[in-house]
Each structure stands twice: as structure tokens, then as C-alpha cells.
Image (cartoon, one colour):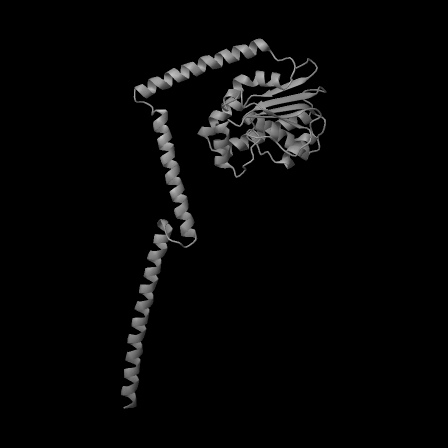
Length: 282
């Protein structure tokens, strides 16, 4: 960026993406949202001076910026941010929240997404009922939000870390270091080759299942999960199936036995009372 601009690259994507698997989604999301509020406080108190601010973030770094802009909107802090670029953002894509974000950004708001980011879709939907994810699709219905599909370049969530420079070039950002971009791409290629060689070694040594075995295991788990879901649904509709239905059946049989026992005892004592009454009259 130019010297007179304050440039902030929120670099939480790599660290938090790993933590995403280790920790619960709720904890990680809460931390990113708190970090966003802290960033909003810093901007409001003019830590950057009077210079315009550009915010760029990928993965949970994008979530931090999302939370920051929401906080700025709630506090009516307009004009502090000039440009925002979110890459692979694990945030909702609904127009209401993005309209709030758009209101506090003076310049461009860019949503960079990839339809091939399967890791983002799996991890985010595991812990959220939101089905619209900005990192997987365009944000519709908000004037002033630019949507950039990078599916041809980014075919995995962790690719953003090394391809951020190239993506910024694609969307017309200035002063991107081409030499640094080339270096990162070479590193990525070497890392992919090393990881592939290590994976093959582990498969041959029997330390790791082959892709075919993993796919069969996934298919089996999906099948069992679907069968369990159908069984639970049938139980909820009273159509039988599942442990709940068996439990309800057992409880029903016990209740019937208790009622029969009660009737037998009632008839027995009623007969005794009737016999005693006849004796007294005689």
C-alpha cells in the first residue's frame, strides 16, 4: 500500500485454521469476535493516526474483520476504514450483516470466495446452522460489495495463505510484491511435493489408510449416520424403530401389567368386602 495508508493484514488464518480442528468451533469463533471488537476500539481511538485504513484477512482473520466492521456499525463509527478484502471468510453471507459492513467502509468491500473450499464448508457447517457462507459463495443483494470467484486458483482453504498476494493482484490492489508472491508459490509447490511423498510412504508402510480405504470408511459412516437419522425420525413419528421406540414399547408393556395387577387386587378386595357385608347381615 502507499506510505500514507495504514495497511493491516489480519494474519490469524493459518493459526486459527489449525486450532479450528483442535478446539471447539464456539471457542475459536468467540475469540475471533472478541479480537474484532478490540480492533474496532483501536480504530476508533485513532491508533493509526488520521490515515485511511485497509483491512485484508483470510480464514478466521476475515472473521476478525467481519466482527470489527459489525462493531463499528453498531457504534456509528463511519469513515475510519477505506478498503476491506475478505478471503475465504467463515461468516454468513446474508445481506443484512453485509449491508452494515458496507456502511462503515468508504471505499471497496471485496468478498473473495472459492466454491472448492471444502474444508471451510465442512468445519463451518458442523457448528453453525447458517448455510450461506461468504467464503463459498457470492454475497447477493448488497450494492457496493464486489464478489470475486477464485475457484480456479484456490482449490483448498489453506491455499489462501500462500496465494493471498496473487489474489490481491487479481482484484487490482496496488504495490503487491511480485517477488514475494513468486517465493511463496515456490514454497507451496515444494510443500505439496513433500507432503505427497510423505503420504505415499505412510500408505506403503501401513501407517495411513489409502484414499480408497478412507473413502470407503467415509461412505460407511455416512450410511450408518443416515440409517440412525431415519430411525430417530421414525421413532419421533411413532412409527417404530430405534432405541426410543423399544424403550417406549417396554414402558407400555410394564404399564399394562401394572394395570392388570391393580384390577386383580381391586376385584379381590371388593369380593372380600362383599362377603363380609353378607355375613354381618345374616
